[in-house]
Length: 56
Image (cartoon, rainbow, N blue to C red; front, top):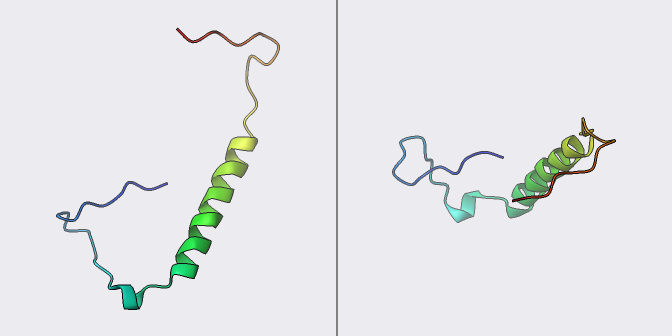
């Protein structure tokens, strides 16, 4: 995911609501989340034979 842009940041671009497509935005977010989940699912722990450490 990307870092949110602040309002005072010169890179911030305001887009009026009438120029947005909420369905497209949600579709993009779903694709990003699916990609992130797929990338995380491919992680294989190095110490899979050992028991996990307890958090302190």
